[in-house]
Length: 268
Image 1 (spheres, rainbow, N blue to C red):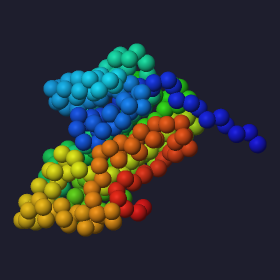
Image 2: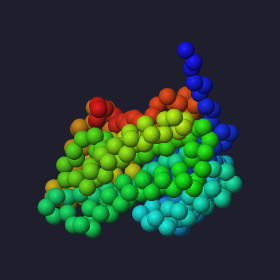
Image 3: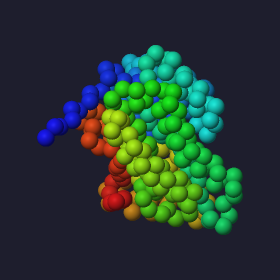
Image 4: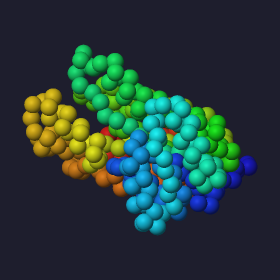
């Protein structure tokens, strides 16, 4: 029986991370930088990108970045071109992290809200992935990693969160299909599914539920924490740790999976 050799990661691979100026994205950029990867990050706000790049460079990491709206196809093309130009080498790791919350009573959800949640959370994942495969160099070498930040909401329905749940279910489906497609190339594709994580987006979610339920944000947090077997929110660093592991050679046989970081909230 012939056993296929495990392809090894390039030295100091280039990683493109979207939505990387706060929360999980920032923790991922820092984790990958600490692993010696060269990181190119993006977010919508140019000032936030510049400040984050400066902060991470001051910590000793190799980081560059550019502002980009991942909902826009032209901006996606420019972003990938900038990432390749920054280091003069192909992108070997793509972390699709950019996303937004969004929900409410379904009967009252506008087309604009639905379309923006889907465009931000799902369509951007497809467009970034396609662009990196076509013009970013991912797949040109027998090693690559695509990691999509999904959610436990992509495996279960979330009360008053139909747009968000729908987008994250679709990201997981895309991940599983693409993982099988790219398996022969040596590029793995996985989704990381956080549960409740203490981030700026989590604060906005609590505020939204407090308004819908006519209660306090503290009450909302108590209700959320009561559903988590560990009794607490996960941290951005805990999520980033799994993302970082998936970029290692030890994770070479993990592909087409949706892996939870949720304190036991989801068990599927």
